[in-house]
Structures are given as structure tokens and as C-alpha cells.
Amino acid sequence: MLLNYFGEGRQEPCGNCDICLDPPKQYDGLMDARKALSTIYRVNQRFGMGYVVEVLRGANNQRIRDLAHDKLPVYGIGRDQSHEHWVSVIRQLIHLGMVTQNIAQHSALQLTEAARPVLAWRSAVAACRAAYRRVEAASDAEILRRQLRSQTVRQTAQIA
Image (cartoon, rainbow, N blue to C red; front, side, top):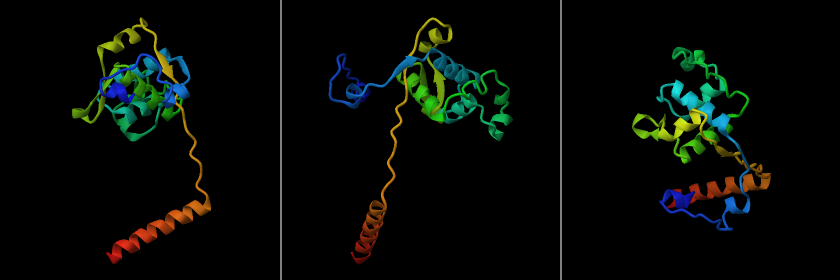
């Protein structure tokens, strides 16, 4: 990913990074891609990722009702998946070049020409399952150590 960001790519696996050592699980992402792309299109490509995910999942809030997006055929079609799942799908669509974020319009998601074949059922999409890392709860000793450290830093700053 980092190499791609700087315009460099690697065709063969490096064998050292987290993706090579623990490859993500892939699945046929065509339906998820179509749902996300269709939702972006139906909200007129004017909203950011969070809002698109809310429409996909069928959120019941005032903004969605005011804009009548609860009446769209795509409203709630992704309620069977988590918020994190849809964020992952949209990020992958951005990475695949099917969606862009228009920074000039508050990061509104917009479709590119690469999305057309997917919407027309003429292209497959290999997606990856999002890997969720479980964060371990800090022990009482660790919490106390952090509190003492922050107190020491504050006291040192007051002396100086």
C-alpha cells in the first residue's frame, strides 16, 4: 500500500510485510461493490463515506429523512453488515479506482468510469474481509503507570 501511494509497485510478494505474512481473506465482493456504488450514485455523489454508510445500513435519522434518502431503493440494503464492513468496502473501491473522494466538496464520494462495468454486471470484484484487531484492555498496573507518568510530566512542566 505504501509503495503504491508513492507510485511504486511490487508484483511479487515481499515476504516481510503484514499482508504477506498474514494475507487478508478474499471473497466475491461484486454484490457489496454494487450496493455501495449504487448508493453513492443514488445520493447524487454529494455525500461522504459516513453518510453513504448510514444510508446503506438504513439509519433512521433526521438528515436522511429530510433529504428523503429513506425513500431510495438502496436505503437499508446493507443493514446485514456492520458499519466497519461498509467502510472497508468503500475504501477498497477507492483503492481500486472506482470511487474518488472530492476534497473540494467535503470528501464527497464520486464514481469514476471504472465503476461502470461493475454496475452493469460486466466485471468481477475481489474484495478482502476487514481484519479487526482486538485491543487488549490495559491492566490496572498499566493504567496507574500511565497516570503517574502524566502527573510527572505536568509537574516537570510546572517547575521549568
